[in-house]
Image 1 (cartoon, rainbow, N blue to C red):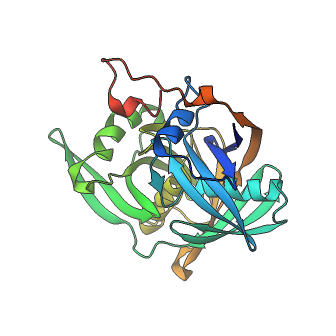
Image 2: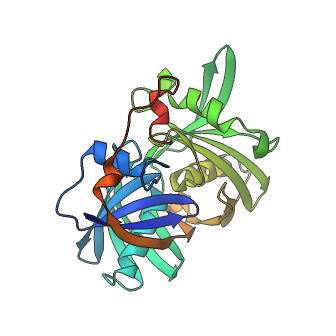
Amino acid sequence: MTRFYKLSGSGNDFLALAEPWETPPPERIRAWCRRGVSLGADGLFILRRAEGGGTMDYFNADGLPADLCLNGTRCAAQLAFHLGWVEERAHLRTGAGSVTARRLDGSRTAVELPAPVEPPQPLTVDIGGTSRAGWRILVGVPHFVLLWPDGLETAPVRELGRQLRYHPVFGLPGTNVDFVRFPARERMEIRTYERGVEDETLSCGTGVLAGAAVGLVLAKVRLPLRVETQGGFELLVAGDPEAGSWSLAGDARVVAEGELLPGAEVSPPLPAWKGSADLVKT
């Protein structure tokens, strides 16, 4: 049996292991994160105690590691507070470097981190003879941001997102794909197709910062910026990226804890009519 915690950060949901004896192999993480068949999650993180906070190793639902997941990092901080490791502030070491987290209350946290070294870069990608103009940026993990001014309810997040996620221009790692709209200078709306989950998620923290960075470069927004996500939660981007730092604040909750039993590792093969990318989101 494996002790676990379930957390949600603005709809981005995670399994968490606190100081486990070992890191589970990719196939076990993939099985645990498979919705309907097992407990299900967008990813899993391992939190180990360290002075002033902890270290965090993050894995997408496909079982593969990722350097950074900001909603996951905010949830990891909330778990550290929940476990009594720290009180109001936590220093967390991630694959993309160290971040500082603040406890706002029992259901909200904020993380402060360095702004990206490189600003968003314009990039036009050809998909099936149609050119898609967007912005490429690294926020710990790669993102491709598309402006979608006509309304996100019509955005083809799953279809176009998957095509762009695997486009050769982004190389073997691929990219996350964000569809954003700026209805006002202080507001942003966003939907994200996440690599490693291979589907739209209800929220993506690094995607929120990627979209905000594009909005700032285009002078369409200013900070603090209120961001509406697909999960219905509002996130807040604040700080001063030109000075080298910014923050992301909002919903982060510990929602359950328990034991993962051997049955959680069962993961039957997909039927012939489903693609391999469907495994992590089924």
